[in-house]
Length: 433
Ligand code: NAD
Image 1 (cartoon, rainbow, N blue to C red):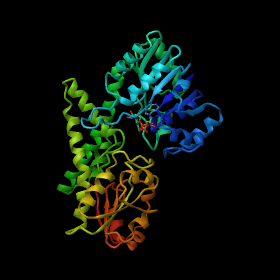
Image 2 (image 1 turned 180 degrees about the vertical axis):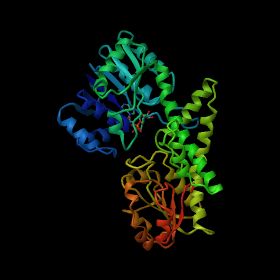
Image 3 (image 1 turned 30 degrees about the vertical axis):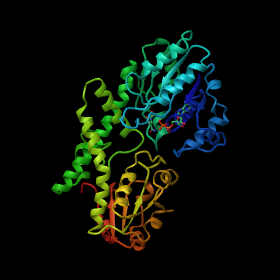
Image 4 (image 1 turned 90 degrees about the vertical axis):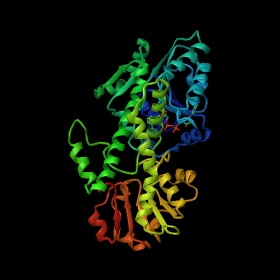
């Protein structure tokens, strides 16, 4: 199969490299010439474990190439995937579809024969209809099927998720398109991975329903964590106690600073807008968005409370800045709201992240960036674990305490035991216990 991936970001690049690894011929396209130049030179524009080797081996095998030239790439392709960003539109929270429609216009101009256009980007219900309308209007003479194939990979575990997905959802009623998509994902059949064929609208909505459900699970346990603090219970035990029930499941029940990242915040908001447009409210998701929004800044207040009476003039070190471990992605990371709340209260903020420093600098230019946890903690009154990178699970707590000016440890990911922290001389605050 000849596959084109338009947009070579977290999703496009990983998907493109994995499709190439399946044995397909893949061209990844991006408008960002810097990104393409880096990829052509073998440098990864993002941090994702295993990606560099996967890209290198497939480029060497002649199955994977990168270009800014969409027209040349699209000519003769069997399937053209749209993997561009769909951020929240400024002002109203609707998904901004301008990149998707711009890419569609460009594809329309470049088509040379029958093909299948696939939206892999997360797009609201009805977007596929509009993509189809644009293509038909511009190129009525060419037979193009438009398919929805949302992506469920997680950053930080993206390659494994793509190659061994729990399911692949494919939304189309077009038989020819189904056959092409079956061929695209055929290597997965060998592992007996479930491919779920649905209508296009069902597929589009499934992606939002999945993310909204996961965001709900996180937000649910976060509120239970607050209640645990109020009544003197331990949220980690509550989480285990409910999660062992197979109907509930253990995943996504870790209390913390609230969800962030490039998907949950924007996708929950976009779902609210879809529900509004169709006059079919989703009250649970409305509550989730509201609770999670207030939680991030509340975590800043939690740190201030741990600092005691006068926080002004004190110094806090944040460990982990990205929205989760094993990525350099800073989009909507809880660290941003926490750092802002602290700075607003007159606190100096230092930070360390194993992979996200470069991206963090762009959104938080005023932070003092440090090379490791001990460097960050030097002279600090409090250390806050914001993101649970593995490297922070085995910190020498005595050494950490030794370089600090104060004794406050705020563990927003519950990765330390209270006794171990106390033994090292810390005044320890966690979440929900
Ligand atoms: P991203 O911002 O990392 O990448 C998007 C890329 O598209 C950018 O490199 C941009 O330059 C490029 N682009 C935009 N318009 C273009 C055009 N006309 N031609 C060529 N390139 C163009 O975004 P992402 O995180 O990869 O997300 C992409 C989509 O996938 C979004 O809809 C997102 O919701 C969805 N998604 C993301 C994840 C994730 O974990 N990041 C997971 C599942 C789904």
